[in-house]
Length: 88
Image (cartoon, rainbow, N blue to C red; front, side, top):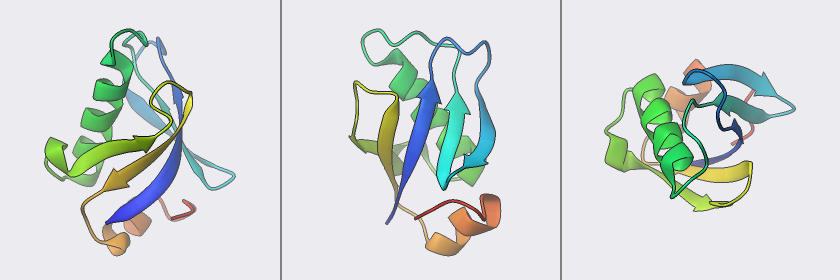
């Protein structure tokens, strides 16, 4: 299990990872932050980027904030290969 911080920009025009800044993953999704739609888009995006099942990713804190802590059921190496500057 790996945990890291994500700074999410909802209504960002596209679903994409913008990189790592100050140890935090920077992400944007096109969904609005209504009824959890932006969070769901974020979880699918992270799962796709890390090539893990969508159910392996969840928001553990900050569900209603731009800054979230995300947990992924995978090994640390997989995350660090994808985003080497990420603080986990």
